Image (cartoon, rainbow, N blue to C red):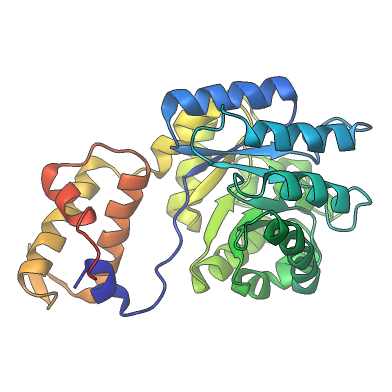
Length: 329
């Protein structure tokens, strides 16, 4: 049996997505992002922004442009999504019509901002599906921004929706929604990792994601070109809060984010050694360096290798042999 079949026993494996989600709102930045993705490969996703990161007053023209770029030859890997206007916006339906209806087959996902409830997400997905299915795409993934009180309250229900594959924390809107009760310092480090209300919100959203095998994406670092801060934020988001993905809003942020979320070679080697012994023991318990390992820990080490592969890490031959095992018929 394939390791994934043994370790997850018929259950769906947790979803994995590239660790960096890079946002771009203007045509210049969108084209620049596509060129960088062509250079680095599909190690990061791009999200074309129709909402806060785009100019106001040209909403329809922008939606048409987004569809054109997604459909263009410059979209080499089909790892470009789009953040639409919020479902309550008068521009939302047109965004869906022109972007989903025009580029459904090439879109990686759709992002829904400022949602208030699982029911609102469900209704938005219904409209998305109408246009996507008409364009020949029945399974377009949806990402949801958790940045309102209502979305946080219903994060578990939103994460449970089958078409939702990722929840992202929108820290600036979340803090602003408290109208001064949370200080502005909580939008950035160190406050974003210490303020009790922000910590609670992040942890609840992440817990909802992991309960349903979905991806939890961390908010932006607003210090645009401060690479050490970006790297620190990404490291803390993963190690202390359980996020597995993070937004980028400047090309200089992409590599620090990827590095922070990519397993270290020492972790890859440890996972390889443990899984190699586990396979030799037909996935029964083993003892290595005086520590017991069984299928509970094997699942963890399997995910380490999967994340390393997704990040484009050059795997040792033994690790590559494990993650590239053919699926059983």
